[in-house]
Amino acid sequence: MSLQVNLRHLEEHGIHLEGELPAAELDLGVNDELIRAEQPLRYDLSVELLHDAVLVTGSLALPLDCECGRCLKKFKTELKLSGWAAHLPLEGEDKVPVDNDCVDLTPFVREDILLNFPQHPLCKPDCAGLKPKGRARKVEAAEKPAAAVWAELDKLKIK
Ligand SMILES: [Zn+2]
Image 1 (cartoon, rainbow, N blue to C red):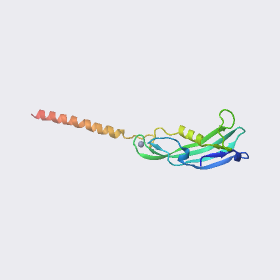
Image 2: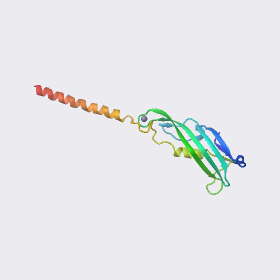
Image 3: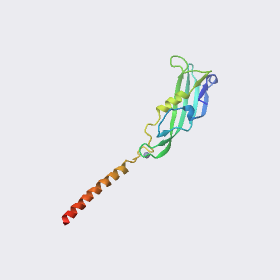
Image 4: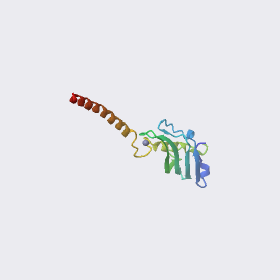
C-alpha cells in the first residue's frame, strides 16, 4: 500500500491520487519522545507526465501527537505541506527508479516531511512553559531564610 504511480496510466492524461499512507509505510524513522507520527499521512496529489519527468503537485498532511517542549502539555498538531511539488526526472543522472512501470513516491514524500518536521514542538508559539513557576518557588525559598534572619535579629534587639 505504498504510494505508487503507474507511468502507463499517465500516458493519456494526468491522474489524481487521494488517500492515506500508513505510518508504517511512510516509515519516518523518527525516534522523538516529544513528537509521535503514528497516524496515516493524507495525500491529495495531481500527477502528470512531462516529456522526461513526472510532476507531482498537491498537498500532504500528517497528524502529529506532540508534547510541548516547554510545559510538557500533550497536544495534537498537523504537519501540512499544502503546495507540495516534486519533479521526478525519468532520464539523466538523477532519474528515479522505475519498477514495473511504477514510480514509488514514498521516498520523496518522506524526505520532504522530514525536512519540515518540527524540531521543538510548542503547544502555542508563546508558551511560557514551567519556568515562571520554578522561579517563583526559588524566590519564596530565598525569602524564608531572610525572614528568619530578621526574626533572629529582632530577638537580639529585644534582649
Ligand atoms: Zn506549552
